[in-house]
Image (cartoon, rainbow, N blue to C red):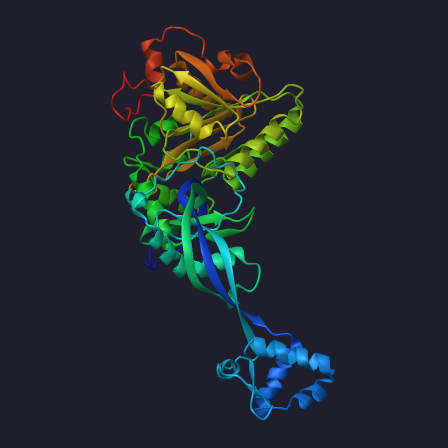
Length: 521
């Protein structure tokens, strides 16, 4: 049983694992507000101690103040004038300096140090998310936000009046002060908002961090933590209400039901370990995580390891780049292009920070020993021409080279990465919870020649169903021949046989979503 985290208590079997980070664009709007503030400011030392002296003796003569502090006549007159202007003292008919009602009030409130209330008017700029009307800080994003999934603004977007914004600002001004004031925020209060106007509509990038935890008697708890990245390390947690709105958005996205079963995937890549956890319903994630915690899911060889979560997840990216770097140094030869065949799940590649770092790491290792340039090419199987625009919008700023495949079978939950002769990765996207479109890739990373060949065959068989390929975008001025090894990928134009259609997963030939056990990809 897979459930989202709540307050239910249970025995935690394994530690909490971070398995995915999904970056989304939050609809927001910037407003300009003309605000009046009051700020409690400390008095100059001479004025502070003069007030203490006046309060202590309930009135003093001017000459007593002059003698006590050793002031000249000019300095004394300046001190008295300043305290009178600040309405902290009064002069009684007998010429004594008395504490004013304002000073006595401050003293009655047990203020250790008398302060001065200063009034200030400033034009403030505040950003509100349009899902919950919460103030969110505007900071520079560390990753690439272009192409990330966009949460649509609610239907009530057009009905949010300026009165509501002013009201919400009045409730949340403390958050605004913490985000915009370097000091003195705790002593500043909002007096009034005299004017408010909209400035522009924005999209603010946020991250939804997904973690899993196995709990005895419950199965898996899925934790979703919505955060805003402040820098490379620091993160700010967002409100529970905003997290709930994001979860509602994720629940509306649909994971494709076509394609191949988890068992088909295991048989195609010859994964005898993952195959043990195959069930009629798909994949026994609970048992696999428990056994992984107890180190029972190994492949018995240093050339193959299990991989949980997207390849660009920090821990996975480090393992992949280290493996590739070690092989490049050992071989001392040029490295071929890396071919990436993505899954068609809704949030594939929805990451603005880790994905960018992953691409940078691998490009560095791919070209560390090469005189020629090695590239990272991602393939997208196009079923309709209208898909091209959406794919370009989503990925051309975050993936270096995109290539379309025409006429092949639709992509499904299987994801493949192949660097021919060096390493191969195969993953299957499982759903921890059927009520959410969030998927977690599980699979293997291998440098074993036999396992690599199986994964390469799987990639080639998927490519064979295509009738052509086209470069959708490229960061560098390279030709199709430099990006696509048609011989290796078996993209040469030729008629498909019935067997080829079957092995490449042609959905017109095979209408069911699962194949019989004797069939392969």
